[in-house]
Image 1: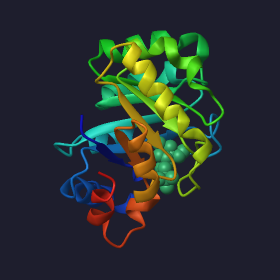
Image 2: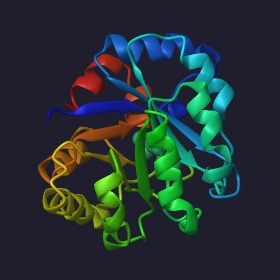
Image 3: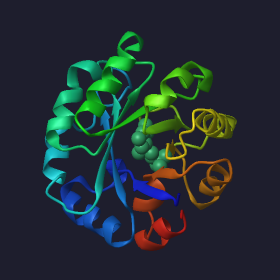
Image 4: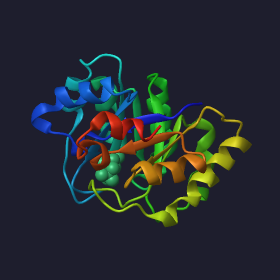
Length: 216
Ligand code: DX5
Ligand code: ZN
């Protein structure tokens, strides 16, 4: 399986969102990463389902929605209706409903992802791996773009790769988010990651296309 690059629009120009998404698509990004924050699960507020719905009008790029919200069970249907292709929510948010939320996403033919924060060990989500399309390993504390990559999280990538092998899930996407640049991307890919999220590295670059291509 090749590498999927998912630029995070958190670092894009919100006044020119269509222009920026077209630019990353043109540069070869297959997904666009949309960070949804509620000011409660994380100490920041960003965007919601109406923005996902608006971006749905752009063709040929998958909408990769990352829910950093306290009540994914309550809001997941809004993101399904808005046209998300992939919905990833946090394992830590509503532990009692994790399986129910995964089933709801999958029954709508949307890809289901589960994310863990830096302090959560991979063994806690092992039992969900057979049902998931994607596991997202955070390499910063969720909430803000432009933070420093936490090297202490990288062994989790190999752990997920091993659990995926045991579960015979060769097609599982192992995504890494936070502090990704050309150097940290290489570390993640070597350990088995195949989907890379990058915000500030791409959008703060003077050459968006070169930045995206340096991650493949
Ligand atoms: C952080 C978000 C990330 C963020 C990454 O909570 O989930 O997707 O945009 O930003 P960079 O790539 O700048 O670390
Ligand atoms: Zn994200």
